Length: 226
Image (cartoon, rainbow, N blue to C red; front, top):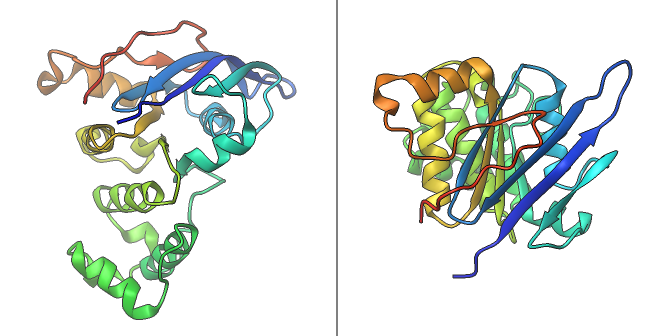
């Protein structure tokens, strides 16, 4: 299997009075998951958009397999539930959200197909529920699965899944599942979420790369999960 690498080197996004994103460096390959931690704010969104080639950086570069191509990044990096960007409207019924996500993946959006999709995952009873009422351990896996099914996707960026509460193991294990399936997976979370994830009794020993700090230009080395 061909392995791919998504790399950001010293990327910075300026704004006034302070930058949206301080210089950040990271690298993740197919079969790996990487945690990026930082204070709540626009930095998480800016990082996600930059990694997906959807936001011009003011310094540094983003590369996929050594190639600096915004077009390729947009085709290959899928953003999952990014606040203010790909985050669905919380008042929409789940079936509407799923239909819109399936459409972006080039899949059938017929009412019957959407209901079947939900039924197959044991959540058909939530079809009419507003998204804000859908549990985090249903919402994040569902949106991640559909995003990963888009044609040509090689990498996934999950942005601040801990904002919905719940056990951080759920979204971190989810990231591991998609990494094991061959994707390069970046998960951003708050410092509090990272602390909980890396210090809980069940987390020892911490076998993944130590979290990268949002706004830190230090590059961590990683071990593959595959």
